[in-house]
Image (cartoon, rainbow, N blue to C red; front, side):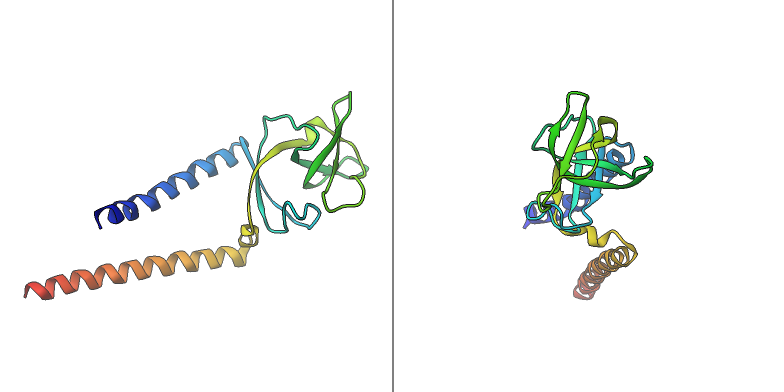
Length: 163
């Protein structure tokens, strides 16, 4: 029982510490986090998966990476998570989604590549919108209220047992 209490005491603190460190790494650009927005990388990644990439790694053919997609005028349209097909001698990348029939339309300069994918977190991207944030707050609030209620009941039972 003592081990379980120690685990329950430290688990939220460790998870909160991990979340703070991850937020700092994402905020400083050391780690790139993106939500997969389409089915172009299925079956490796699905829509609403969150991917984490490292910006200092240079992607090689076969790696999955994040890059900024630009239109013909050079304006950034969106970030894309696709697989590197080739790397030219001039340092430009050709990308392709695993579920796409053809490669992406334009070559991508190395400066537009934002990171090599290190890991994915399945399905939590759907929580990264206002409705999802409200659900998270409701779940956390419900857990807190439940824990607070149980603690209060235990204290009241202990006091009534002493009387």
